[in-house]
Structures are given as structure tokens and as C-alpha cells.
Image (cartoon, rainbow, N blue to C red; front, side, top):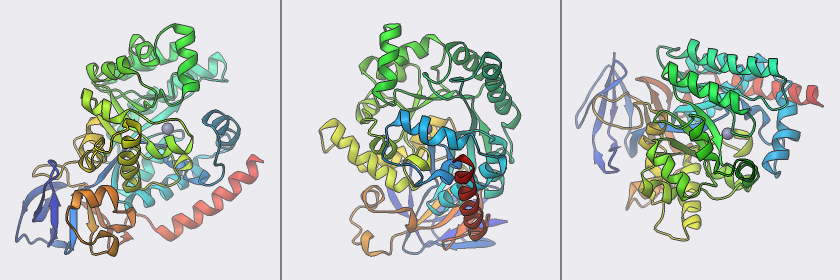
Amino acid sequence: MTLAIQGGRVLRPDMTVARADVLVEDGRIEAIEEGIDADQTLDAEGSLVMPGLVNPHCHVPMSLLRSNADDMQLGPWLREAIWPVEAELTAEDVRSGSELGLVEMIKNGITTFADMYFFVPEVARAVDDAGMRGLLGYGIITEGKDDEESREEVREGIEFAREYDGFADGRVRTAVMPHSLTTVEPWALEETAEAADEMGVPLHFHANETRNEVDPIVEERGKRPLEWAEELGMLDGESFVAHGVHCDETEIELLAETDTGVGHCPASNMKLNSGIAPVQDMLDAGVDVGVATDGPASNNDLDQFDELRDAAMIGKLGADDPTAVSAASAVEMATWRAADVLGMDVGRLEEGAPADLAVVDFEKPHLTPQHDLVSLLAYAVRGGDVRHTVCDGTVLMANREVLTLDEDRVRREATERAQDLLERAE
Ligand SMILES: [Zn+2]
């Protein structure tokens, strides 16, 4: 079975655009040239075929908590509004919240995401059904837990990473995910880093998100959080952190030297007033940076086009320089740069690459005229402009209709479950 995406323009990894059709066979991009036909076709007239977007940091089941608690600081938001409700979550809730988030991501052209949560096998099964790719991990937290419970957390995080790597025909990869440098005890940080290293999977954790997180580490240990993380063995070529808002020059250098990637979450950072990440400085230093949505409760949507525009905008504010975080940089950070953060072979539209694609419809008033398609991608396109989504050679959405999950059912179930959940938590 071959698939041809016909009549559009294509976005190459070097951010140039050319008129071409795309031929997909056995999950790979077989050819990019004009005049291709195949068993199955998707119309891309007036559209741009680009790599499926890559979202390097999310907590997708939190879609059930969307719009439940806003306008709070990170600490109280987590401890008072989020964790008490999450304590009531069941496996079925996580499945339902995942499906909701995955439908939303598919509709916004996202084909790969990294996710940290619990009841993660449910997330993995939802990814399998949705036809997407996920780099999944169990969010290990030892804060507020006794010794035995903490050991159990670490065991579960490592066990999931071992058992589910390669699930869903290889579309699910895993990572060991200690939640953060302040919510996980040092012995557990060290143990998880060692385990990830042994298994050859990435280590992923939140780092330097807010000043309230950074200051106590600096006071107690006399060094920056990422310097301490390196001592614990947590930074290496396969590791990636979320946020990295409050990184000083030494830490940026350390990220570059150790080849540690960053999932930059501009909307979440603005909403929780966490600060502005030094993204242009990181890019200049050679750090792999990807643009991520973070969880849907702190964003509050999973539209990565919104996110890459935010990255470009806030990047300029942060650098006090309108030339910082250019349109091309922002688009790269949602495609191949984000894939490099995850160490996954996606995010590039080229012959031989996995056939993960988003087809964006440019026949819209807000996308007219078309002097520069990359500029439009960064500053004007919205998730709702995505017309077709393809992952691993399978059509997940055609003409805005999601084919792998039943959108109406998913929305209905999520609405009911979210209602029940909040009632239980009260
Ligand atoms: Zn997060």
C-alpha cells in the first residue's frame, strides 16, 4: 500500500519550500518529487506538507484538569489544586484524558510527543490506538512519601521504561522520568540516572523552572541546580530537561557540553509567571532546544503552532532583541530540533525518513498573501489550519476528520470523567 500526498509544497529541513508530491511506502518517505501517484492519495493543493510536529514535554492526561485551576503560582498550583485531584485519578481517567489530548494533538498536526505521568501503560495504549509516537515515562515523585513508598516509585519508573520501550510496533519509546530536582530525593535521582544509563534510554526531568526551585538548591549546596544534577550523573547525551528557565551562563555551557536537550515551554512559563528562558543564548551555545506545550492544565491547549509563536515572541522579549528566535528557529524547534532533543529519528521531511507529516492548508485569509511560508508558520498558522496528519505512514486525520479515534466519543467520555473526578476530589 502506497500513499501519495499530491499538489502541495514541501518544507525541507533547511526551511526552504519547494513544489513537490510526497510518496510514502512502508511507513517511510520514499520520494519527494512532482508527478507522483499511489494506491491512496491525499490532496495538498494550496497546502504545505511539513514534518509532523514534535512536542518534547507534556502531561497529556492533565487535559481532564483543563480550566479547573488557573492564575496561581507553580508551588501552590501543584500542591493545592493539582496533586489533590490527581490523587483521585483512576487508570480509566488517565486513558480518557490521554485520548482527549491525543485527538487534540492529531488535529493540531503533532505526531510525536514526550509525556510524563502515572498509569503510563494507559497512555501507551492510547498512543497505540491513536497511531502516534510517544516517548513516555512514569513521573517519579518521592516528596511526601515514606521510604518504602519512595522505593516503590523508583521501581515503577524503571520498570515501565524497561517493559514498554518498543511498544506499539516501536512507536512507543520510553524514558526514566524523575519529576524534578526538588520533588525527588537525591538518592532516587542518582538511582534513576544510573538505571536510564544502563538501559540506554533517556532521563527526563523538570529543571530550573522557577526561582523558588533554584534558590534553595543554590543555598543548600553552594552550586547551581544543573551543576548538582551533573554531579548526580543526570546530564548526558540522552538526557533532556523541561523548562530550563533560570539557567545561568555556566549551566548553558554545561547543557551544551553534555549534549543535554531542553524542552522549552513558553506558554506554561508565561501563565505560571515562571520567567523567560534564555533560548537564543542556548541556541547560540549549541544546546538542542525544542518547543513544548507542557501539560494542558498549564497552557491550556495542545496547539504547538501557538507554542512556537510564543517561543519566537517571548524569545525576543527575553533577549531584548527583535532578531532573536527567528521564525525559522521557532519552526525548527517544533520539528527537527525537538526530535534531536528526544533522540528520535523524526521531524525531517526527506527521503528515507519516517513518514510523519502535517499538511497545513494555506488557503485562508489569515495566511494571505504568502510572501514567506516559514514566517506564516511561525506567526500566523494555527493548529486548526492542519488539514491532514500522517504518522508512520498511516493517515491519522484526513480533511480534519480524525480516523484513528472517535472524536465525539472521546469528548463525551472525557467530559463525564472530568466531572466525576472533581466531585470525588471535593
Ligand atoms: Zn511539566
